[in-house]
Image 1 (cartoon, rainbow, N blue to C red):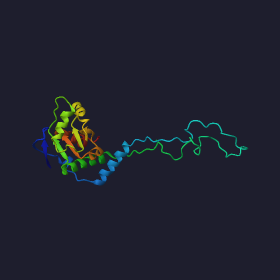
Image 2 (cartoon, rainbow, N blue to C red):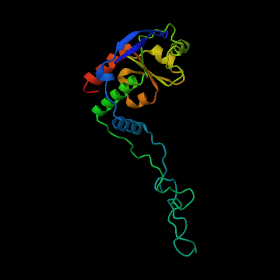
Image 3 (cartoon, rainbow, N blue to C red):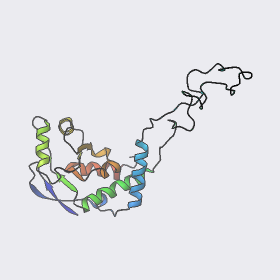
Image 4 (tube, helix red, strand yellow):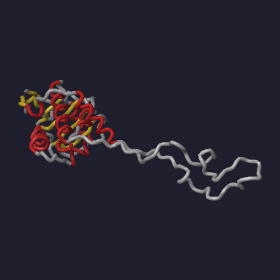
Length: 213
């Protein structure tokens, strides 16, 4: 599969052959969905937590004697039926939402999403990015000349570049990440993938040749 390659001025400077092992896979929606759901579960943060009667402060003394008062018997003011008492069946932070997905499944789903983006013309290959001052205005000027401008875009770099990271973080609808840290969920959350040419080799070395990734 061939696709056009752009420079940072938004000009088409040629075409590039995309490797079939990365961008030529058929799409399996069930596998991609399974991996995406697992990653969402693993990112889930459990913050809601209610205290039961054993965790609520106070209530160690019996509120009144068992018999002779004419009132119902009670053993603690922290009983769930008392105001300020413990909560029954409330949300607890001990709940574990983690899900395990085999590495081979994660890698295959990732390559499937990349292949689908290429087939749907939502993959843009950029020759290189060179910033003079590393300002947001410079980076926004580059994006404004590309087809992905105004859409959710995921910029994929071959390695960490502090200038590009800082210049990109305040641009709306744009995220940036290194190629070695790609995952299915981030790819699906963006309409376009803006990838530097060198990132293709990094993806191949990370997700194809390295069996431990």
